[in-house]
Image 1 (cartoon, one colour):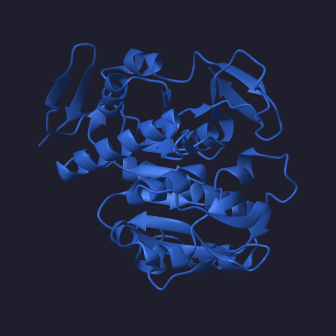
Image 2 (cartoon, helix red, strand yellow):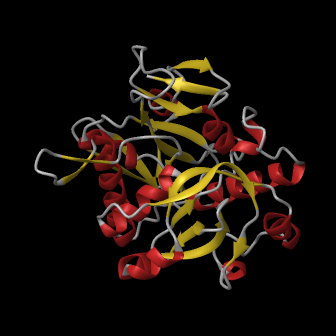
Length: 322
């Protein structure tokens, strides 16, 4: 017996998408919305007319698993974000550098425009999951940090010396039963713990002590892996949501195959296989979400294809610019 595709159309004033409620012989591709990163004064392109970018290695990484990237501009309206989130299968917060908080003249902490959009996206993803629509979020480095800051609504990052740093991971007792690692080959976990194949590039993070200090973090996330920085300080480098399909990485699975500037990035085939494992995991998680673009033209209108691409080599091989 064949099942017919029965599309359920979701419409707003300027947005039309549908939810797949059956099997279809037509082509399907998973999509992921990527939030752009603002170009700030210390960045390489600060004197250009561009205002934001997408790191190319993240695009290459997800495309290696058959995932198609969709742009979400950090200065989009909330209505525009709602529209895109009704079409994509999940969200990726990339690594990079961006102002997250600042203090006003009275010394009161405020969230930046970028961080406010991050928090809005996370809240909408929570609502979707609560309403029975599986909606994953993946965050790498900066993306990991914003997931944890959002959870406690407080700037809780600590200093670590893990920039341009190749290291090993050590796993929690729940790693092999976790959603993200339960299907990982034992030899891959062995190389991640002893093969020196993971690359980190952060000077902020979350320690186990801070995790245990906040009940909200313990309720929301399960630490799966840790590493030690150059001073021997332990930080959480892999975590997954307990209730929601949210995943945070402080190491960089995308860099081994696609970035070549930093000499400490391991390009061993086992490091590349690690990246492919996580990209495939992303695709599997995204496939659980029923959202669809109306057609290929609808996807192209939201893709990165119309943006300028610049080769930099440092800190990224290439970036998409807006």
